Amino acid sequence: MNVLFIVLNDLVYLDEILEEFVTLKVRGATIIDSEGMAAAILKRDGLGGLLSGGLFKVETKDIQQNSKTIFTVIPDEETLEKVVTSVKKIVERSRQKTVGFMFTVPVSGIYPLSPKKPK
Image 1 (cartoon, helix red, strand yellow):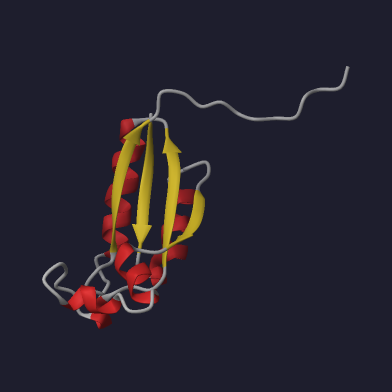
Image 2 (image 1 turned 60 degrees about the vertical axis):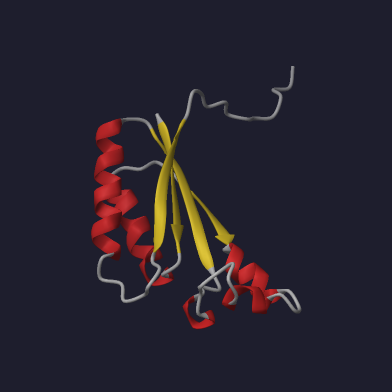
């Protein structure tokens, strides 16, 4: 069992990815608004210059301001491979320099939370 994280910078593909999750019977996902480090640094007064110095070689026009982080627990390797392959296929049409990335983390247990039952 793994949790798949997708950090999506090209938000045009968000709905298509979620539709593919439904098609592949992924039972649920959580979507969080997220922001990369470069975008956060640019927002701070006086630190935008760091990005053009020796520390970072980044053009400010290439920095994605908004992204979404999607995560979902996938119970088996076969489904995981199908989802990863499908997401790669969906975003390969993007013209953005940075579309996003995916990674997995093993899950050793899931513990549902629920209210205490009245006696």
